[in-house]
Amino acid sequence: MSALSASQRKKGDAFLAEAESTVKKSTWFASSTERKYEDAAECYVKAANAYKVGGLNDEAGSAYQQAAELYKDKLKSLSEASKAL
Image 1 (cartoon, helix red, strand yellow):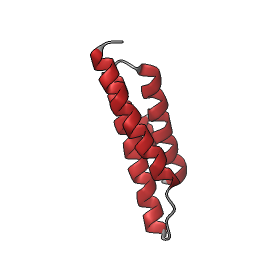
Image 2 (spheres, one colour):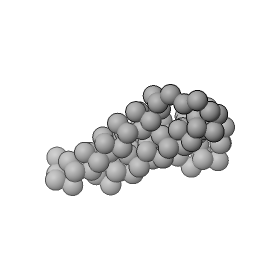
Image 3 (cartoon, helix red, strand yellow):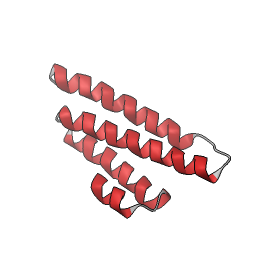
Image 4 (spheres, helix red, strand yellow):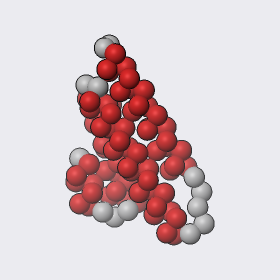
């Protein structure tokens, strides 16, 4: 694994962990819940982009898919889901 791939994997893993912790946060209000899912989806996209730059295509595809699922299922935004896919 090249140095670029290793550094991009670290970045991607950090964004992935941030997204997963964001999804697990509890919220009290509906607007907070929606914001939580938006933030998590953005983190998944950032992770996917980091993996893609590092040439880690399987990991990038998985992160994009997780972002698309949040956009589709939780945020009801089919346009954002299609962009993530």
